[in-house]
Length: 233
Image (cartoon, rainbow, N blue to C red):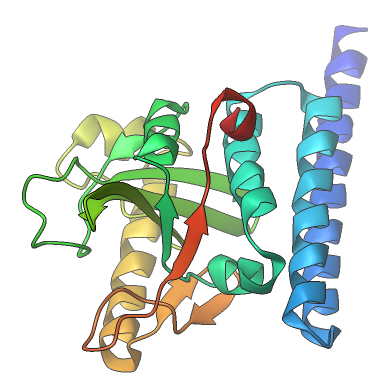
């Protein structure tokens, strides 16, 4: 009986993952064929909201669910016209006094990491990363805080290749899906970084974006978001 119950639970989770991936495939197809950025953004928003609700229904409020909620809340507050670029790795400034950054650092699985962003902001808080894995889809949120025109601004972008804590053996062995996943993430992140250096584009889960804070003419997505308890949790 216990074996049957375990098998049923395994099949239950398998079908839930299959549903998530089917919706992500639908998301990709529809966003590519939609005629406007607004339509693309609306499709992406509704798809991620569906994934969050489906995950809560079938798996409960797990660590992954908490990460999905954080991402979906950001997408929900973003103008639809910018959603696809954000999911392609577009760089975002959130005018929020650093609130979204604090929510991300408090999320289960968040960790401090190095990055090449804003190296001239020496007194800024450490950059943090948070990874969401949906089978073959990897979404890594990288965030930090900078000061812009006297205001504390959260910057955030999505990456398809998480950068692990290379010098932390415990992290490399056990964080999220373990050593194999972290080694793959390190290799993939390095190849994305090299590509970024040559193309000057950001590399995200759903493609590449021209929205970057680097270069002589920075181009970022600006978003005002209070990110209070209701907005981010």
